[in-house]
Length: 204
Image (cartoon, rainbow, N blue to C red):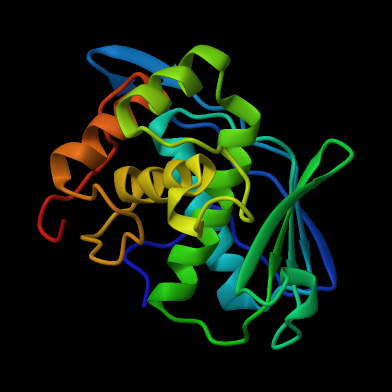
């Protein structure tokens, strides 16, 4: 199922704290080192824990710091995710990622990466980067699902574009408009100030 093994071996338990070793990456010849976040895995089956580690590893490989994270597995209980498959929100200083599906599949892996991207965006996006992203994408509302459809919210565009730029295989399920390879690339660069880690152009 996996293209590579995660660097962190995760045991199945009701509650775990995981630490990932920092990895140096280069961008235009300059080394960058991501600091591993404090991570809690709550009731996570082994395949879901591996997917969470895979998602964190992609941010790590790109040199992006993640905030403290808590991944919580709810199985088929949809209420914690407001009826969706996943939901990210902050509790105190921890970014909590609720997972409301028991099916491990490629779309579930993408969902976990998408919710992890929300955590990174909320943690790392500066006002200048946010303004640059709005200029490139043209969204009106950053996060207002009553006044804008899901795909028109700036935060959802940001998470989808981070998924495209980081994921380690071609992706054809980006769920936003303005989704040509060049448009996704421009959005990623506006968010991060650097080229995509992978940014496969096979399927966009």
